[in-house]
Length: 435
Image (cartoon, rainbow, N blue to C red; front, side):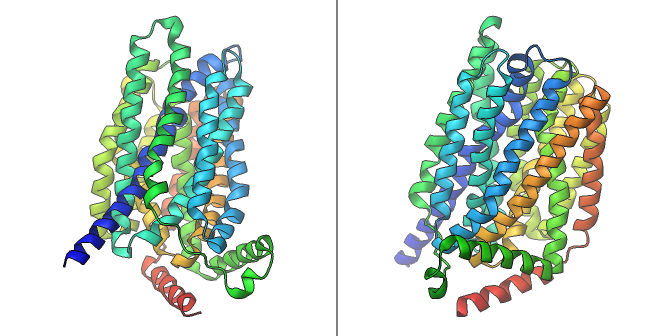
């Protein structure tokens, strides 16, 4: 009995350490990506650009970052599976993201190109590290734990990001107007420090996933084996209709969600909503979203992750329609609160559903492959948003494209038979384990 209790405590410690990385890196997603850098880019780094151009350049910057991450994800995911280096690669790309975020302190008035460069470094590190973070989950959690642990990570992420954003918002509120840009740059530095410190529990306590290379593969050049595995993963995805349907649906609705996240604040700034209202709304989202993320985890245990995702997407569709008619800070706040009810839960259940659909031995390859789809989706969404903004003179019109993506993604997701896909994944897991 004592040994069982010790084992249970050790297992819980590993799960909690894994979830704490969401607390760590969500500071980047909340403070840099969503709340402060879009405002800083619009009003400080992009000062002097003609109306609408800063919004367009911000969209292009996001697309460039995701393109680099998309090119890196699949190859490194396959190498991580082969070598058993998921955690090591996570640490390396987290270090890149932390460095890029810290360097934003040097991007001053009118230096939009420098701000873009440092943000690209930060976002490439953030996005690529997440490939290996997600891929570690099936190795430490049982299938019955996936929904709950994934939701816990997102809940901690919202709380952690929210606490640091609250501190930044307080510093900005009490800063003299002429000091606001400098305080914002110090907030970027604080994000880098937060990310570095709170990544330590994962690096210390979460075990590395085992290597999956066979004896024959260990005798061949690793890059060649990795490329062969990438091709094999692509062929396997094509064979499994349910997984393919899920991936296409994921590509569409994740692009829509990501575009809303990346572009909402800068569009709000463009139509004249003040910095206090923008940052205050993002801050409120963090604390409202945390309990709803946990609630989605419990809901998924009863109705399944697919239905929970669909519920979240219905909320997002309503938000997107409302965003087309947004005019005031009250509109922005109400739409933000609606997003808070669905954002974390939708993302958490997507992560747990994806982890169910593939054998544990191939999570690095799968999440690397998924990262390509999502990064190219992320490239397309902000880029089209930017093009619409340049053509119409209003970035707000881009939300019409987002609505189309959401509806198409929802339609395809309803056709996914998750039970069939999970059975195939379990059969392949057993086959690989027997080799």
